[in-house]
Image (cartoon, rainbow, N blue to C red; front, side, top):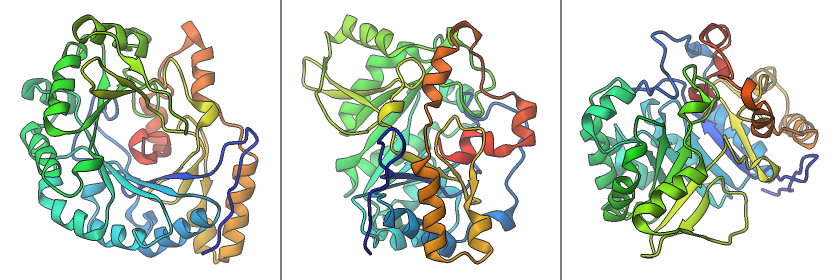
Length: 344
């Protein structure tokens, strides 16, 4: 398959596709899905594996070299290893998955055999009671067992852990989480609490900024040295005095919009060029209407070359007027605004 690198108006390449395979999740995390009820995507609208593969081929032909499977929780999608095996044959450099870890132990052998390259597991706390309060579910032991299983598998080299830090909730666990990550051989990334999608309870007072995280860690472990790295990865990486490396994803206070190369495809084929975007492009409609591969590529290329998104930067500019991106009523009316729908 021949390909070209497609750039937007700020010179950002189309090189990274986050692929949501389902909007369903088996947790109800307070920063993502805090409401009692949700409007789910209708099953007939969900892309088949064949449709996903067709669209991925079009993105790859335009320069995408990194694929990340997301949800919702991707492991609740039936026969997911079948899709992974298909995608692993594409001319890409990286095929990763973000998961909450609840079902990892059950599916790990199939994930390895299907050709998955890397796994990132969400782990916000080491406390079972705090986990239940944060997620609404009593699955903490399953998550830790899943992480242990990955750490003992061929996927251990690329294991990352993500922790969303919320003031007054888990901000006292920074060092214990770093210690745990070291024990299982994972790189930990602290994520600022974001005001996007289903974060209907978000407030600026609950955000622990990247700078505050660094100061808190330094108070116990010593100052962290920033690593000088090129690329578009969302995490800025740091090395502790003892050599351990961790990352910070500071989308709320220090956005990386100017280097963002990410596109997001929902499980029902809606394409978003920014996590904060209000509207997307319905690629499923174009696909199911019979558009040719060339026409699909032209559509994707025309949207990306016109892209000028800087959603996180625009949110920072709101300052004191900043609140949740969308309220519960807006999310029920348009579930595509949900972060668990567009892949976080």
